[in-house]
Length: 140
Image (cartoon, rainbow, N blue to C red; front, side):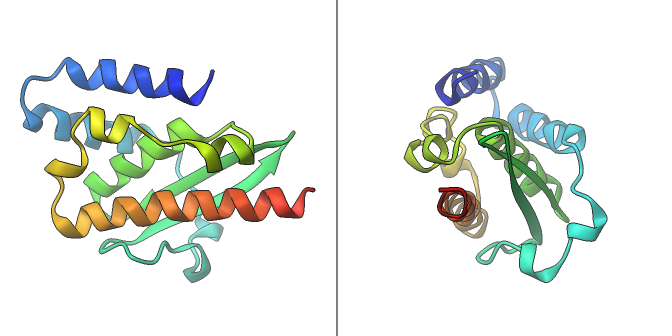
């Protein structure tokens, strides 16, 4: 499935909720359902800088596509990273690097986060794209 198709699914899912309280609950649920990163990978070098909460991100390439796994010590943040993992995992490095991630604005996520969480969201996206660039370079 293309990144845009996954984004459209997420936009549709979030449109089912009228209030942000329901959307936050859904985010928390997504975080709970996300496959957890291997405990051995929860090291300082996997922490995303710029996040108020702890967010660990692991990236690896399999069959030309990047697989992301992640975890966070904060429930909302875990839901946010779960969305990003869902959208960006199983795509090529170039697809990840080139995507605009329009679903974030479409569901109103950034404007309903505290400034520190919004900065963390930007840091997560930046790190995922940097990892994609590094893996692309290693595999060329």
